[in-house]
Length: 243
Ligand SMILES: NC(=O)c1ccc[n+]([C@@H]2O[C@H](COP(=O)([O-])OP(=O)(O)OC[C@H]3O[C@@H](n4cnc5c(N)ncnc54)[C@H](OP(=O)(O)O)[C@@H]3O)[C@@H](O)[C@H]2O)c1
Image (cartoon, rainbow, N blue to C red; front, side, top):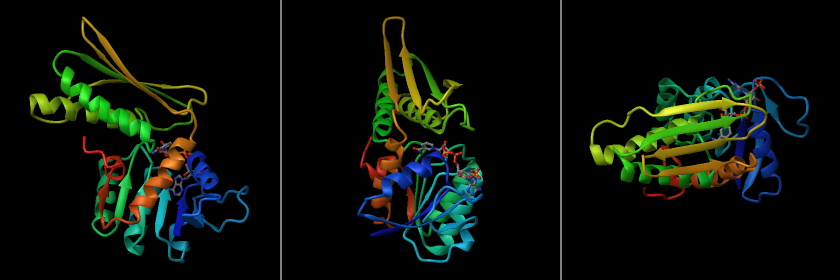
């Protein structure tokens, strides 16, 4: 059984909690979040990671960048694998994850759905084939509570697009792409990448229908992560995607 500690108590962590119930691979050890929620009875809850003193195998983090930095430090200190889906991370936050990854397995994925991993691979391939011919744009829509824009997923798609193009043109992976972000209602997450030439148009679209797609992805990725040695991993690693 994987002893898991959850970090955060928001929309995503609550879906992870719901999916842990009845999952025989996992045992919930506790939850740490900055403000103690009153509506999660029967769970050991702390308001700081250092207050939690039992041994665990995995920490699943869905918080904010500050929370993820604390999680990286705590996991490194306590020899615990870290799976984080938090977005809006800065270069310094990613550096903190890489620092922890020298000692423990760390996986950061701005989108934990398998479908989005597949879409990212398709976008990389399309960018390689359409490089130089097509105008490429990315649009994303999320619920109005989301703090970061563009979404971490849109930035990852832009990176995939640039890496596909650079395979043809060489050079750096940080070309420009137009990303438009919309925040409205309770939309869980929609991403579209459009490749247009004067003669044809290709659209690759992913729509998350339920947050459980990310929560179940997190639990599957976590199962894989605890079996790995120290290192920094991405979706391509746990899904064994070579592209
Ligand atoms: N990778 C994926 O597949 C995926 C999917 C969906 C969302 N996300 C990302 O996951 C993150 C969380 O999303 P969400 O919708 O669950 O957000 P949310 O509902 O706002 O929940 C965030 C939770 O983290 C807590 N928190 C914030 N800063 C903290 C800190 N420094 N230490 C401890 N706890 C802290 C918050 O506490 P308070 O309530 O006290 O503020 C809240 O309980 C976001 O970055 C989002 O973009 C990723």
